[in-house]
Length: 186
Image (cartoon, rainbow, N blue to C red; front, side, top):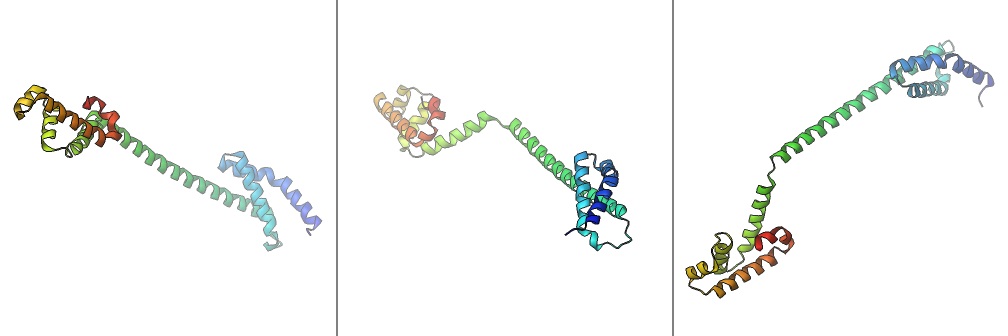
């Protein structure tokens, strides 16, 4: 059990020096609530370690030393936190600049058309040779059914059959991409 005289001495120390300790900490910390927390922590630290001090110790100077070290630790931690925040900010800014640069350089039409063409070419590879050639002449070379029929020596009905067959294969192979190719296929 705590000695009543020790408690009275602590209360007197607290009331006589609390303001001085807070002003000292606040001078460096620039945040009154944090300065008050540091002082309370320092007083608690003193109270918990009072029996380890020599009888002729200058208690206010001891507590002020504890306030000083706790203030230094707080400021160092603030600096580390600010350095980390700055590094994160710098990293995020670099990432943002990279995104802006790559987005500015992006040509959606080229990206879409090259990807779309690759998917269509892969699907066309599954067609029989004659059907593929007829489809390519119809869609890529814009030849009429009559021109294609004359080229292959077939009827226009046969050309329509091959084109329909090609479109069905493409629709089936590209069903997941169909909304993107609706215009192309029609």
